[in-house]
Each structure stands twice: as structure tokens, then as C-alpha cells.
Image 1 (cartoon, rainbow, N blue to C red):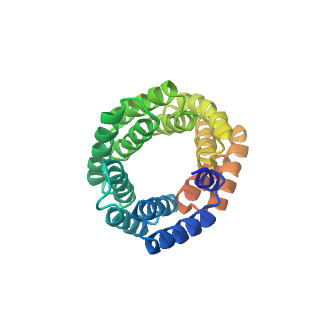
Image 2: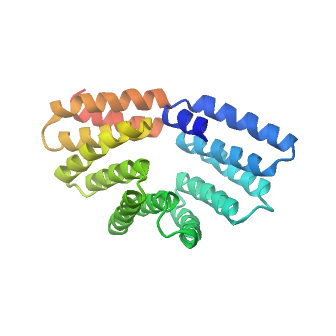
Image 3: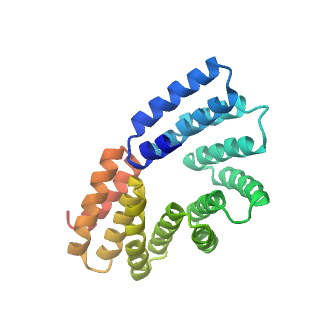
Length: 248
């Protein structure tokens, strides 16, 4: 798990994917369905980060197969990966249904935990993409509350940044700036590169839309640099748009 986290946060996603693929193959050969499922799950995460919907769904199918006789935790995790795939293909009702099932399961284990904060954040993201900004704000704030309660710093950074993006969607530029300034040092402390880049984009956009383009320029450049390195084309386009807004 520590190696997975390092490769994920540092943006070494090709290395992470190779490790997952090799690990799944070895686990299958050893008839170790438990670890085969987890390797397929993490491979699916890499594909999700890269926006490769068909490969995410293929990994979800493999998870389901590997964990056909596993416990409820593994089945919920496979459903979560399906939800990610549906979100990428913009089938938001299917994605939301999957995540609500996952949330209900994890809340039966503990109402407040790291995974509950993660799933609430995902539910809010889907609601935002459906245009239900009020529901998205409610669930982002609940995810943030839970993350703070259980001292889950990555979750605090993630939810704070997503609230900044939500403020941009609501055209509340000052609030977006405030939240992005809160989120960026939190993401830097955690070290997760795509969160840092996203926070930089939110801050650059919020500054540009207040007529403070020069202040946003370095943040926009940093976002473009990180998303270029991570090879996230959709996020890179957004960062390039922010850079253009800032006069870069």
C-alpha cells in the first residue's frame, strides 16, 4: 500500500500501472483471487486518472470476477470502480446509484471514516456534474466534516479544493479564491500532484475573473506543467484555458 500511495501521489502512474498488471498476473497464476482483485482495482484507478473509460470498466469486471466469492468489502470496492467508470462515460445516474450503494455499505461499518469521506466527495462530484450544486455543496461539506473528524488530511485537502471548484461553478470568485488558497498548502503537504495542480487552476481562474490576471499567472503555469507531466488531457485543457485567461 505504501508503494501504491507513493507512485500515485508522485505521478509515477506508468510505473504504478505496470506494477498492478504484473501483480495481477502473478496473483492469478497463484490462484490468489484476493490480491488479483486489488491489483485490478488499482489498475482501474490509473485508467480513471487518465480518463480511459473502457479500461476502467474492464478492470471493474475483472475485480468482480476475482472477488465473486469474496466478502462484502471487496464487492463494495468493485461497485465503487464501476461507479468511476460510469462517471467517466457521463452516465451520472448509474454512477450515483453505484456510489450510494457503496456509501450505505461503509456507513454500516462506521458513520465517520476515511472511506466515508472519500465516497461522500465522489457523490458530491457526480451531483455537481449533474447540475445539482446545492446537493454537491451539502455532500462536499459533509465529506470535509468527516475528514476533519477522523484527521484524514488528504480528504480535507480534496474536499476543500472541490468546494473551491464548486464556488467557481457558482461564479463566486472571492469564495473560490479563499477556498483554493486554503486547499493548496493542504495538498502540497499531502503531496498528491493532481490535487496541487487542480488547486492552482482554481486559484488562477478565480484571480483572473476578479481582474487579477497577473497574480494568477504563476499558478496557471504550475497547473499546466503538472497536468502535462501527468498526461491528463482533459485537466490539461482546463489548465491551459486558465493560463490563457491569465494572459499566458
